[in-house]
Length: 403
Ligand code: TYD
Image (cartoon, rainbow, N blue to C red; front, side, top):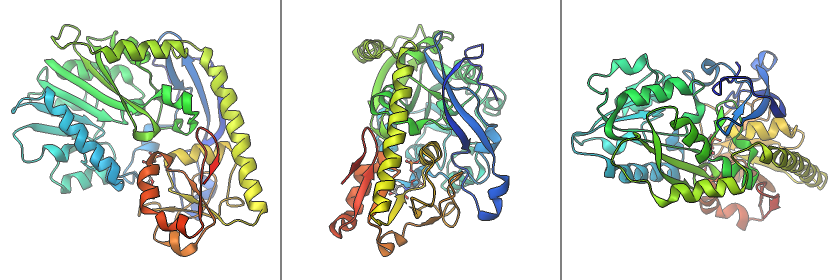
């Protein structure tokens, strides 16, 4: 489907080639019916919006077997606890909260056993069911103008609408912002954190580009979009999650909430590195091509030295890397992962076998390519033995490092 938020077709400035669904981990017998599309990206000057040119149907991405559980990372559990703690400054004891893309309930869990009324919208059935089992009010539907009608007394009465890594997944931003406008109370806030275009550009972490991330936002883009609605940015808080994210805090235009100094500071920084115009796209494209060449060359060099190479974590991000760089089982023997839904399957497009993380130590690889590089601290801490036994990590952003 064409991405038309900006109201017209945007000329793509680069293609990452033939791409499968990032989370489309599959069995061998499914190889011949695998779905591919051309992953192209474009930039809307009107909204300073970095976006996919086309995206696959959302039903292909968020379904009954969505293989991502927020709670698979201890760091993310802690992050959501802190996020919930921080958000309490916007809440009263009888406030209402709505979370978009509430996944397995890791965030909303922090409001259990309080007088706060909370609901999460989660379109993927398995994770939504998991949240329900944990006692979360999880609605197994998309957050949109139709489905918000299921909630009683939330209209103009919701003090916190929040999300993490979800707004950039939503093709119909117009409907999403219209829903927020309908629900937010007079002094309510809309808070969301998403992978940040500034970080992607600076680190060249192009693996944030895949089907689910229809947009990569900047503060300038969000400010221009918000301006189309009764919304404005009042705070911006950079986050270390997903290799560099931004927490956007929006209120109604006429709310009494004060704008923090961060807002102008970050917007000025973005203007300085040209995120408000298409100039940076050329540089970004060049950097991606260079990174692709270097990563492939490094893996070939290691393979020629007879190194046993594995991938660590079958992330959605790795689908872009493996397919764009044309890396398959000839270079990476297997990828380890902790998620039951992925183990025993193969990586999308590149068809590298996924094995249980429990076999990581046992199989004793020489090199582990760290696909979950955004969780580097957590992983290095728990895998000290791998290095002590002579293993090396290969990381690739901003530059290739074998350490
Ligand atoms: P993440 O970087 O959050 O994923 P994505 O790119 O898909 O958004 O990583 C989640 C995946 O990584 C998930 O399949 C579990 C796996 N994983 C491990 O196998 N071990 C780990 O220590 C961590 C943190 C994640």
